[in-house]
Amino acid sequence: MHRLGVSTGIALVCAASSVCAQQMDIYWIDADGAAATLIVTPERQSILVDAAFNRPEDIYSHRIKAAMDDAGLEQLDYFVATHFHGDHVGGVYALAEMVPIIEFIDYGDSTLTAGRNAENFERYLTAAETGKRTSVSPGDVLPLRGVDVTVIAGDKEFLDGPLAGSPGPNPVCEGADPDGLYCRGDDCAPTGLDSDGEDIYSLGFHLSMGDFQYVNVGDLSWGGLHALVCPSNNVGTIDLLDYPHHGNNVAPQFVWSLEPIAAVSSGGATKGGNPDGFEVAAASPGLQGYWQMHRSLGSDDAHNTEERMTANMTAENDQAHWIKAEVSADGSSFTITNTRNGYSESYTTR
Ligand SMILES: [Zn+2]
Image (cartoon, rainbow, N blue to C red):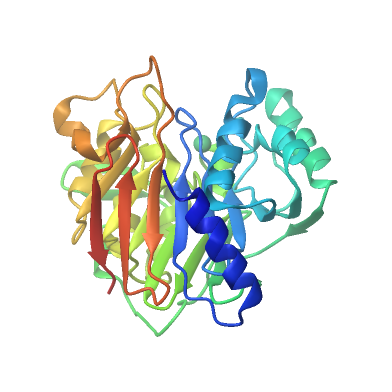
């Protein structure tokens, strides 16, 4: 929380130097169960992934602006709309009036053609008129200095080959049927691509910087998560996972194939964060830290992470604490901090 002066000072050094060895910062901004993740590269290029809800007094847009101020940013290089639900693009209209957004990235035109969701898309288009709008597909790369951001999902399309290497058949997929059910023991769920409306269209991307690997797939639903890792894991293993869909209905084969070292869930007090999603994380091989933006008030202690790794404990008197990851410039390690209590853990990347 004391980084404003530090970041601003180093940003000036970076601007004047061809060699810039500062860390990458990732902020999970509290939006009460909506999504807003701000990524700031070592060269202080920025990507805001989703912009939370449209709410009175533009409360969430101001919270995003506060994180930008903390990072010393005066503009956003990219806004990435994972999809067009209101908890992902609702706040971008107000934000675009507060700060310059250079480029708006999305999966294409919305599938939502009626009601409030269609309004969200129209407002997104209006916001995007303040900058440049680009629709992307799996395999496309966002041009950034020193960081590789590759689109892995969008518009019901998915990577059709491995990001790196040739992983071959994925043993985690045993028991999974792309047209039927995925079962572990008696627990079966659909894996197809026909369910869940807008969520299945979510844009997802893989970010790498040196040895550090991060994935964010928005609210991509079960069939899409399945398609990325079965029958072959085209994403590979990673270090940090933006836990999908606010922690709800997360396909285990996806999490267990990526084997993240740490994960952060954007679940709110009463939105997202269901017990099934927590159980998938708890059983994920190699997961050392599971961080929650909010305690899930509908789940018991056994289905919430530790209090010290939870940024916001109640729905009332919400102080909007954020979770922040700081990634070393060579990608060899990262530290996650809960800004409510200053608790942090450091992890070594693969
Ligand atoms: Zn959502």
